[in-house]
Length: 138
Image (tube, helix red, strand yellow):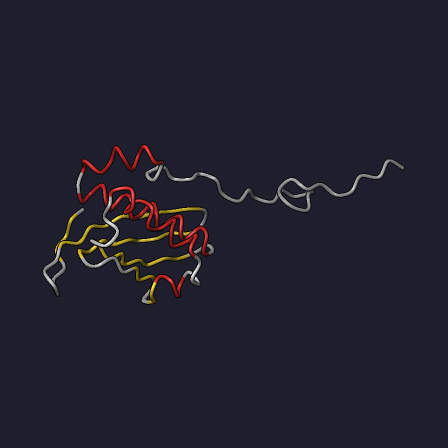
């Protein structure tokens, strides 16, 4: 959904991404390609890990828009990997709102698919979700 930022008058595109227990609310704003997560620069927030930053920039690189939009993120829950993947999904969804023609290439690359895997609950009588107590025959 496109909205207009009241302070700057620029168009803002929203997208929400989820992965495991992480949720990222992403805003795309025309700019020079900065990534701000929870008020910190993206490389600092993701501990200068090139893998996380590459995952996040993937949808923009697919469309050739790396240095045209700033990414502003509010990320909650989970760890850095889950948050990075949730930001990627949020960016991809925001790009679909920017231009519906962006959808097919993003879909082909798998950026619009939410990863449904989550931690399995622990069952009573077991140590973990599936790890059973040691079996003694006698």
